[in-house]
Picture 1 (tube, one colour):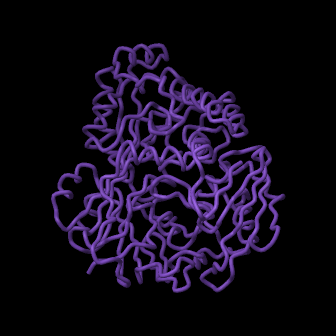
Picture 2 (cartoon, one colour):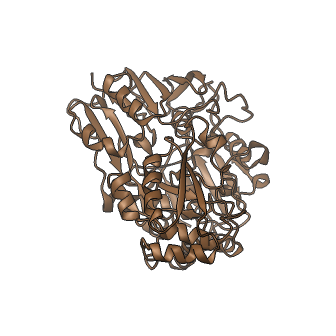
Picture 3 (cartoon, helix red, strand yellow):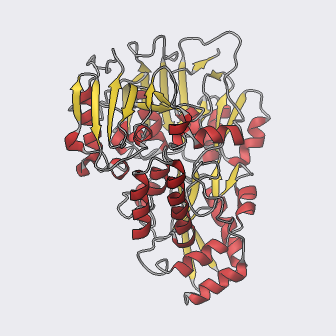
Length: 524
């Protein structure tokens, strides 16, 4: 295996086997990044308060990185903690707390060298034992981390510190994607033995001064941050405003300096304002319409196919998302991913074929309830438009709007058919496995397919790109034809900031520069 060091990025032979270092870089090249915030005349200025409104917040907000699930959780965790490996805005892997990593020829053992002189907020020096503790927490079923299944190949018992700065990771099966997995946001590093996440301790650019779940959190500058001279900001306040219009109005009024998930229908207006900057970034985020396939009527693949053929994807993208994205193929692999299968045709809008499958399933005249919410980006409008499309195929869809507050805990994975969105994952394996492997914690369609599971297992052990590609193509075919979800659209990340905010670079992995704000500053 190739080695990564702080002196440079991985070479192409490895990076094309890693989604973070391949697909995302390609996304930037092919689709472009529309707003960068990377040009300024006078240079960064230190100081200032940065106020941010995210699109979700509830009483279940957490500062425990292993349990991160919402946008605002990730936003806050990124201020407090660091990962071993980061994904750069150009999609390549770059060293963070790890300054280098190297795998053996088989890909089943890796040595990670930690950066020297890194301290936690409480003054403790970062060591390999802290990383071991962090990984074992995620692997522990009692932690209930959604990333547990994604790093299941790591042998927790065999994790070893060769010395204070050297970590040895043994895998139960070869996995060429291990460096990219170390960029998972659930693997933000915490101190050994730390359990009180109401009082979080990390190595990140800011420490937490106060936190009230469902209300707000306040972060202050870490004067001992390991990146010299950073961060520039003195303070960050984060709040949740679930309604997209209310978030935009808060930005216009100057109550906040930045918002996540700008409504696509507001992009044109926001772009016309001289004091507002819009970030529209292609990426792997996508909308899903998962049907619980473990009970009628969605246990019938004919029902699922009928509902897939009843959607005009290009029209949905144009009308519901103002064209801010690309169409999807009923699997979670974006068209710019090196592992994307070009042989799967775009599913056409075919009311007659939809009627055929519905009749075959014995569900003619049935009404299917689709639950959505304003917490889903453009979800209410998209669901309404889809219902109109389906009606032309004689399919009755009842759209129900659930409260944004608590949607992910009370509605998602609880209702038989409830809309969802995914941010994307740093590897092709995690992209396919996080919601579709039989044992995945977030298997939102309750779907089980032994052949699909075996493909994922076999592909992890293969380092040859072309051989892996053939397996992943087959996995995509299975999902497109038998999977539990309609995946019609890959959505651009849409955010907006005050024009005074500088240093936030559009990032293909998430909102507002993937919340990497150690270089953000205010031009007052």
